[in-house]
Image 1 (cartoon, chains in turn purple, cyan):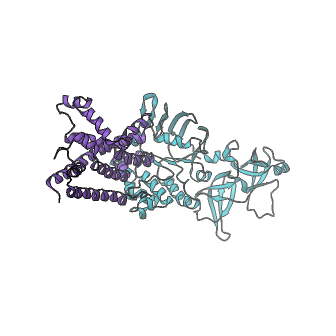
Image 2: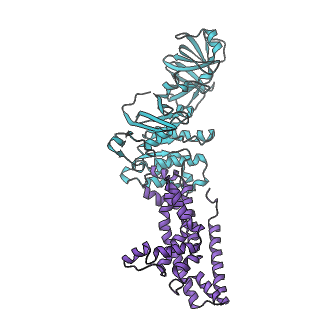
Image 3: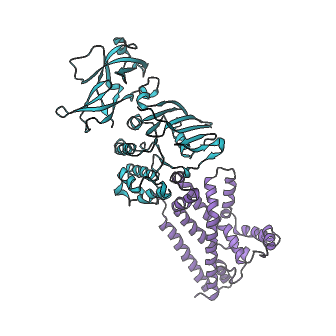
Length: 224
Length: 363
């Protein structure tokens, strides 16, 4: 069955995915809103940056994050001057990396939902005395609910499933940065196939259930 | 038509897009129904959006019943959500995530209590949507949605109602279902209504005042009774041209199934209608239903024959002439062939008899 180290890895993974998804919803919402509404030239550039993690090898992202967040990198220098130390090989570092790595999976569904909505509901709400902020919470969020559901599921699942970035930026420190995917890798390296099986099967089942939820709860073409 | 006591809506907008120009300076009465009428691309919707504040025409000015909503010379532009207006669009625009009841409450809840003059119950009753309250918008027919949309706008106790072709998405049957509700709004609430339309029949039925727009400019404004029969106006041409007459029901002839309407030019016999004696009615006479004779025909099946004088002649479609007629001070139109016009020797001031084949009461 699962040993203590595996349980620790699972707990850490779920914590990482939860924190990352929460942060992504907060960051991703304004980014998605801006991308959905803007006519600025910058839209293309920002969209491309947001989508980068989809195409880049995780090791490349991990490498650059390591450089930027490291003691000599710009953000590393900043965090040090703030007395926070450096982020790589800490849980906070993992969160920062995961946020960047999973950004497109949260931004894009939300952006699609905002775009599909169009201007009409916003204008209608304005003619019914709702201020822009009021409109956002009373009309935009409820109408974009399917998009948010997709974003939460994908953001969470994608964070759980990452390996390369985590290994590069988090290393492999038990209880602090050793997540499930890394743990599986360790087990396999150590020829502990039984443990590897348990964890892998768990991941497989988890991923399947999550995707099933996504497709069952949120079938496309539900609205209208 | 009574002259408005004072102009209460002043709007001056100028928008200059590469493909589109809007340049209007409107003085509209602060009561009754004003129709913004024009073909698509005439700027009527843009004009309405500018009044709502959904479109910002730089340098514009807008005053509604004494309140300035936009004055760019003073850097004043009140955002839409602070303007006490009701706005109804073609597709109703109901919030799909809320029930009909929650849709109705959405705007009302956001109006401070002292400013609520129209109750929810009142708007529900006025639009006859009592039985729809717990339904979701997706399950409503277009006509029902539209009624909910209108009730929702009403429930905010607007000081002005703006409607952008509220009936255009409806077929003739649904249209005739909603028109009576709009007429009730007109009759029962003292809220000025600005109504964008390209359908002459809606304007004829509803409007007290109309503004004709063409290519973003005001072509003419005034009472529809006047504008619809002015031969220099596009409305007074084509197959749909018609005249509006204000009259009073003078008698009901049950035996012959006729309703008699008295107007300034005489008496008209109409197919029997359920109306009260002495009730004011709007009567429509289509130009294509009017023929002209020089002498009064005796042996004819046509009931309505009125003496008239020719006030204008204007080319219509090829081979057709639109004739403006004065019937005891009331203007009507006759659409006849050019050949008949020549045969009759029609000229300004010539006395003729107008034979009217079809007359309909609008309300």
